[in-house]
Image (cartoon, rainbow, N blue to C red; front, side, top):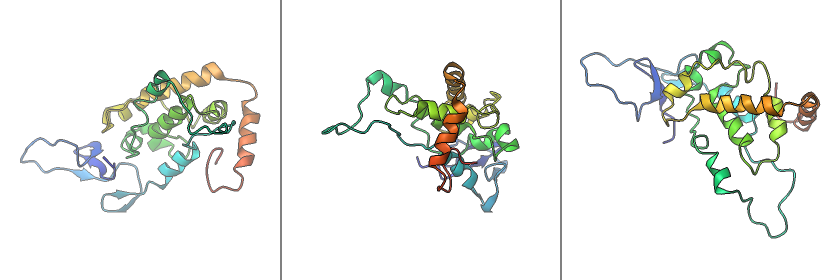
Amino acid sequence: ICGSCAMNINGKNGLACLLYIEPSAKAIEIQPLPHTYVVKDLIPDLTNFYNHYKAIEPWLKRKEPKAKGQKEFLQSKDDRAKLDGMYECILCACCMTSCPSYWWNPEYYLGPAVLMQAYRWVADSRDQFTEERLAWVNDTMKLYRCHGIMNCTNCCPKGLDPAEAIVHLKNECEESYAENWKSVIAGEGRKNAGRESGMMYA
């Protein structure tokens, strides 16, 4: 499943290739994903969504390089299981565009899909930038605009639960909070000064 056919069908976000429609004489109402700029017909402009996704730096970040002869970073089966329900996200933007908080603050609020992917890297035992990731996302607008409305979970075509991942992310921020987080963010920001976007991108 690629996610490229995401649209609003009969008032619900979903993938046209998957969404079941009851046989009926009534017309089927098809619209682009709500609250997006439309490029053409049913094609939304997802530039803002992808910029938010890029901002969380969705790749493995390490402070210690591989040892000589080491081919990969291993993790236990239990640690690997923590990523289930998050890595399967196909970035279709169904959840993002069904979220009222994202409608109201699309330039600041990261949205359910991006926050779930942010937690996916926080939860990954192989990643060594957990503190930096938490410090950056611990923000009134980026994270705490989520009010648990649950539209994201209700419409996910993969049956994932972004709302649960956001709760875990908030808990991690609460449990790990340190007074030096502002200086941590500043340090990371300087590393990305020459980039178009990325962590600390405003």
